[in-house]
Image 1 (cartoon, rainbow, N blue to C red):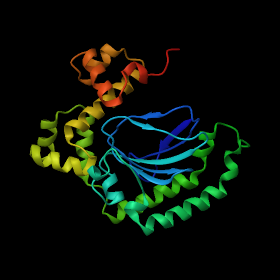
Image 2 (cartoon, rainbow, N blue to C red):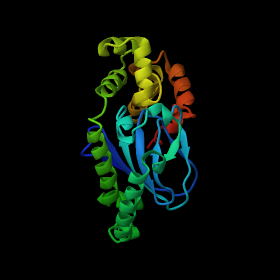
Image 3 (cartoon, helix red, strand yellow):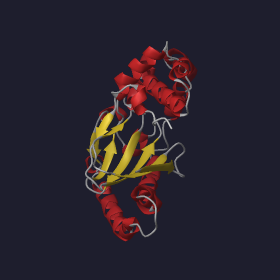
Length: 254
């Protein structure tokens, strides 16, 4: 009961929506991103960058709408270094004060106007209905984009470092390409991503491996393509970051 799609105003951003079935925690894998979230039960929250999988617990029927910001973009939107939010879920009011209260009022008004959309009259799943309501997702994106512009845009270093590491470059090669020494890259990475480049590289490599495996590539081949020493190395890394082996994260075989 989850859907996602691009955030038109923020390159690399993702809008997503879900409705909880309440049948246990949902495993959210680390991705180097920060999210602006709205929950029908908890209100507006910020999800910081996780080092390992976060187990999200919701009540049955709880609706979520989120804006996932690409790696390195969140600090410019939220106004705090990413490492201050690492492994945390923080009420937006703690960061934005009165500006968050204004957004709460706007979201509440939009939620009230869209309440009938999730009744099933339009057909489809509750998550699909939540996603079709552009109001809340659009509001989150509108506010994030305004703050991003006011900050002068994201630090371009974040996009460059994340792109190189996602492509499989080593930390040393990435540091050389962006013109920073190892210590400077580590310090800037903590501010932009919440952790150092080695941790970000591990997380992005895991995501790349799971994408390959999800597309049907055998795990032994995935390990070679994603830069692991062997399949056992892949399994150990995924278990450390996700809490379960890769086979638990793949869709069931047809």
